Image 1 (tube, rainbow, N blue to C red):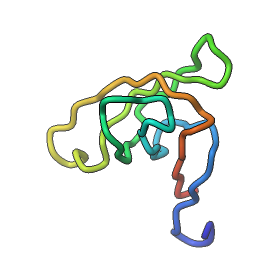
Image 2: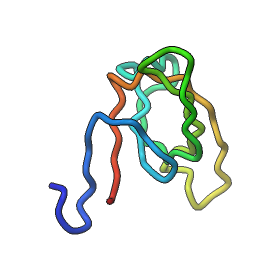
Image 3: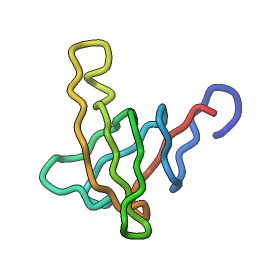
Image 4: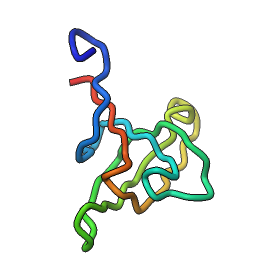
Length: 82
């Protein structure tokens, strides 16, 4: 993993264009678990947390709704093609 076009999945700070796994492990409850594309990533006042504006990967190409989540970085998986 990590060579060629295989995505790299890791615990790291996400950036616009990365994909993140929104889940209860990341501190997001009541929304289930899903991969989402990051539109913007803004640091929170609390260390180890961020505000992410995301679009669910399954909605890309249709009429996507941008949603904002407050996430804990310690439980957030980030997938990047670079």
